[in-house]
Image 1 (cartoon, rainbow, N blue to C red):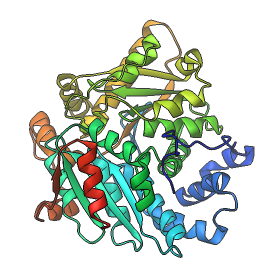
Image 2: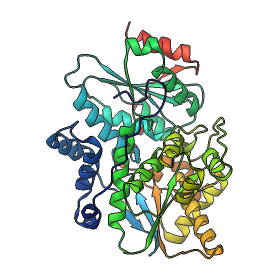
Image 3: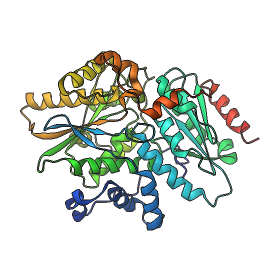
Image 4: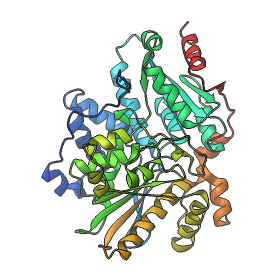
Length: 421
């Protein structure tokens, strides 16, 4: 419920639980919801009753996460079938239902602060929309999200407020983190976060990795998963599942021009920097928060990390080439984030070939958002107009409402305090 620890650090479970042998052996017999319930139970313990946890899962995991085969070895894990057509719907829906449960008897309003580079904000906004006892402030960088993403962020009312910040995603994230360590704000507001800095966002994201392994038809082959990576929340969720015993041999952290993690993995030096704007904007992060969780999972041992994670980066020109190649080669329309994931998997496979490593494995590319959310780039690249889902088309007709602020913490703080005075 706090989101961030009092000292500004990130919460992790005291220990990573392990899946039972029977759970993994019977995976194919379990539904997506059953996988979610049994996984969540290992973390939740007695904090939430079994019946309530079943209800939370039932209301949260009500859309699929299918694995689509591009060929007999290359697959796409589609995570865009939720209400806002992005992977963050899984975490946001679960978190909203869980927080709703915990605040139902609280007479003090819970104030959620969310920094977003695109999809997080809309997923959280829709997940928490109309939930009593909770107010959500979405901070997004002005002019640095797609037109469709901005509409999804700024067209809700009731308990959702969009704050348009003159700055980058990292500025937005800095404002949120600073708020959690500010004594005045902590005294007057009951603060929490729904970013991937909140562990309750990551636990449900592990569900779809487990469900993906269940769907793969081959048996006995190793599994490699390529994850488009910005703030490293999605890959952290996958690594948690792997450390619980899920048979994934390796993860690939696919980055765009914001390649801080890729450079860290190759050099051992963490050198955060100001993010740059790209077509795959949800990955435009220059100081990824979840690196601390990744380091913790590996005991801060870079060699151990490198044994389980590879990382490659690609610029916008390469991203466009990837979209075109996937369409021309497989007839599949992929979004810019998925394209970066595809290119990273392709590079990893070519490297495996040149090093004469094992190449007969299931390669899974995580597709994090519907391509229609990046319609201009995708349409121009594949020379055809992709159909926009009805809920996106309806959203585009709505009127934008946002409050514009500069990126100074004092401005943000005064604004928040003004909402309670």
